[in-house]
Image 1 (cartoon, helix red, strand yellow):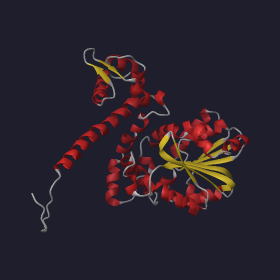
Image 2 (spheres, one colour):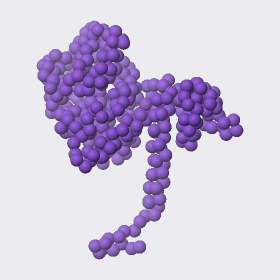
Image 3 (cartoon, helix red, strand yellow):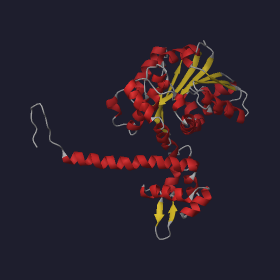
Image 4 (tube, one colour):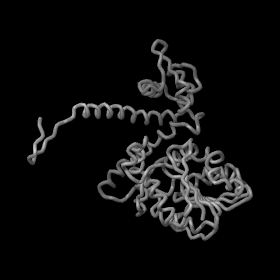
Length: 363
C-alpha cells in the first residue's frame, strides 16, 4: 500500500513498530494483572507467610495464612507465571526468594512495594464515575474512594513517617532544636495523622494541629493520637482554603497535598499569613515537571498521570477547584510559592524517595 494525497489518505504501516507495540501491550497486560494479585498478596498476608516459610505446598501455605487453599493455589499461579514466586513441579512446592521478599513483605517497610500495588484496586472502584466525568465534566468526591485514606496512610508511613527523623527534619538544620524547645506546628491535609503523631511523640514540648477535609481521615487521626496517649496534638476536619490565622505557627507542613486543593494559591497565601516571622514551610509534593515533554522519561510518568486522572485532579474539580493534577510540577510549584510571598524556597530530592520533592522556605 502506498500513501496518497487524496481525501481518503492512507499511510504505510511500520510493521516492526506495530508488532513492538503489540508485544509491549501484552507485557503491560500481564504486569497490570500482577499488580492486582500483588495487592491481594499484601492484604491477605500471603507475602509475609511466604517470606517466613521454607519451600511449601499450597495447602501448607494456606494453613499458615489461615486462608482457603483453592484461592491460595490460584493466586500462586499468578505469582509463579509472573516470576515472583519459584515453583518446584516435582515437589509441588512454592518459595518466595529472599531477593523478592525484601521488597514485598511487611518486614520490608519502609520499602514494601506491595503497598503501592493497592492503588489499582482503589482506583478501579471509581472507574464508572470517572467515565461519567469524561462525558459531563466535574469531579469525583473524596468520599467515593473506598480505602483511600487507609492506603494513603500506608504510603505515608513509608515515604514520610519513616524518614522524618533522619531525612526530612534535617532539611532545615534548626528545626529539631526548635521542636525540642517547643513550637507551634500545623499540618494541612494531615490525612490519618501518622506524620503529625510521630512528631508529637518525638517532641512532647511542641504543640501540633492537623487539618484535613475528610471526616473519616480525622477520625482515624484521633484514634491514633488516643492510642499513643498524646496530649499535645489536635485534629480537626477543616477546609484550609478558609484558614484565617495570622502569624500563629512556627512550622507549617504539607505532605503530598497542595496539588489536590481546590484553590492551591489561596492555601499557599493562607499558609504564608499563618506563619510567624522567621517561621518554616516544609512541603512534600510529586517529583515531576510542569511540562509533559519533560515527563516522558519519568520512570513512573504513566502511573502519575493515571493517578491524577482518577484521583488528584478529579477530587479538586469535584470541589469546583482548579484541578492542578499530580504533575502540576516543580516549575509551577516554585512559581506559586514565590507568588505566595516565599522568597528563599529550596527544593530537595532525598535518596530514599525518588517519587517526591521536598520544599523548604521561610517567611
